[in-house]
Image (cartoon, rainbow, N blue to C red; front, side, top):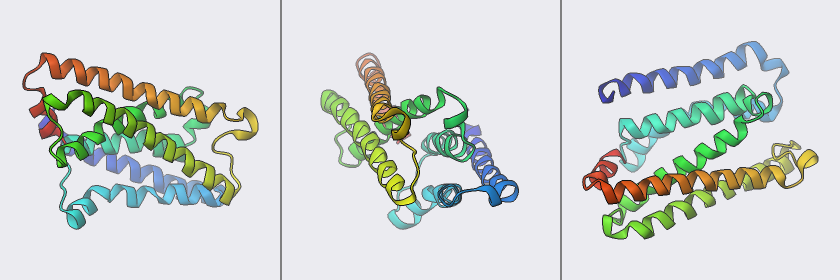
Amino acid sequence: MKKKLPIVNLILVFCLLVVMFYQFIFHFSTLSFSKILTTASILPIIMVPYLLDKVFHYQMTQELQFVYYFFTFISLALGSVLNFYHTISWFDLFAHFLTGVVASFVSCIFLKKYKILKRENTLFVILFMILFAVSISAFWEFFEFFSDKILGGDTQYVKSTGVSDTMEDMLIAFLGSILFSIWYYIKSIRDEKFMKKIEKLV
């Protein structure tokens, strides 16, 4: 599987570009301004791993690129651009659950950079994972709130649900981070080589 990851990542990038061009070619005249911006954002988001390497000299592993592109495809391409959030009832919660998991995983990058990602710091690592994931979820809700105010949208479904949609999104992301942390804790105890595997991954 590891040898196939570069090909899988290229396929994910290709799928993201297909979604973007599909929207612009066949539905551009019917897209709102906010949807045009969302669709166009696919291109710079694809470039993030390249820019991280060139600007910050951080080269994402193929495994991490897979997590990044897969999450982008699910949450942005399918959810926002192709409207899965509106057409599939459970898709929004599924995407926010993934947000909690992915954010917890990404937090390992920061901990590794500052040499805190160690077995003896397991409890601190878990706490940091959960707080990091909740913070990412909160900032996303802030972004949706301000984008609705500026563009006049209703991405938070305030008109129909009040604060229920926002709270459900944050709670499900919190659940994702909790489950990831439990998995991390169990693996760190049972597998002596687990920490080295995580470090190589991030």
